[in-house]
Length: 428
Ligand code: SDX
Image 1 (cartoon, rainbow, N blue to C red):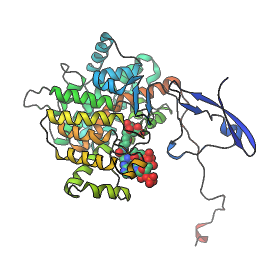
Image 2: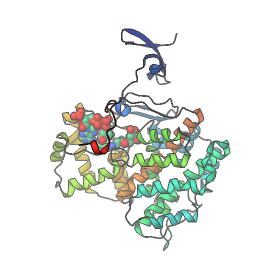
Image 3: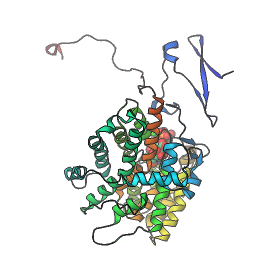
Image 4: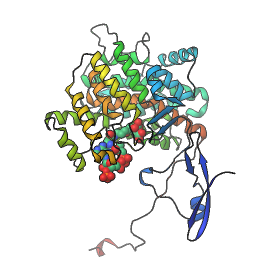
């Protein structure tokens, strides 16, 4: 017999079905609540609201668990590659060697962007934020590929629209960095794999041969895998709600980039670096003062806290080790790392943070690795978007595949009740 939840309203009992997921998560299906009771639920920030059912990523915030299609993030970060994880997220299974080769070859064939897209960079003022440029370029893709406006026309059309986006994203991201430096852009080289190609286009230059350092290629794969999906976070929910209006994929992803830009979300990785530099330069390394100010709500400790993880973010654990390894292998001795570790230790032993379950999140260490690799701080959230892209696309594809209803939440109105219109000459 299926489980039910009973709600007593105005002395009358109402029953609602309980749904149970494959990891035994339970939800009360209130799909008929308003029709039966006239009530809506109220849940600002959707802290208790399941917006959809999804088979892509599983999080357990209390236990610090993260899995993509059932595979533990620790295994994927250690043993997989970013293109293999892309395939897993998109198609639901780890690819065979032949399937992966074909997928990677498809990506390689679509890495170039239209030359007129390169011209779009000329309108950006020097120093304009890379995330604003990325949003513009991604929405512009729908102009260069009008067939993407109707991606559901056929499975092949949908797959080509997806492949084009995944393949061109590294090219666009690398161009943003190159243009930011006033350097000539480098075109993708088919001899490189996906991540090496991105590093070549970003750090190579026209004056000499460039082969990406294997240490950086490995670290970049790991960083992109760790950022690849994270169930219904703010930017993914944005992609899904825009997709639910049947907007095209490129417009939906551009909306996700907009949401990710926020400092409370993906923009935090840039904020963390700037916070650590502030602690070094302005606070003179006084971490205790910084923690005290955070407790007085005078400042946020960027890179700490999470809506779901009320234990260590498993990605932060992996990135903390990777940060030590990459900086050591690159021979980078960054005093900001010592400040980060001191800040983490101070926060983790302070009752304020312990009570609120504020642990380092994915953004706390990632920026230190990006900096050691040579990325300028404003590029950090672009790198988050590069990693999150296959997750956004997979979630969008899942929603469209289920033909979910358009997302349209209700509200509780708190404005003025009905009042008569007053002609302007009578207004005081
Ligand atoms: C990402 O959702 C995802 O999955 C996101 C993400 C992904 O992969 O997509 O994991 C990526 O966005 C990670 C989060 C990056 N953001 C930051 O590092 C910014 C700093 N963190 C905070 O803005 C905050 O922790 C949030 C937004 C991440 C979570 O906010 P919540 O869950 O709404 O928690 P809250 O704001 O209600 O805070 C609870 C308490 C409050 O204090 P009290 O009112 O109870 O006294 O904790 C305090 C907050 O003031 N608090 C912090 C804090 N975060 C929360 N105090 C100091 N520093 C912080 N970072």
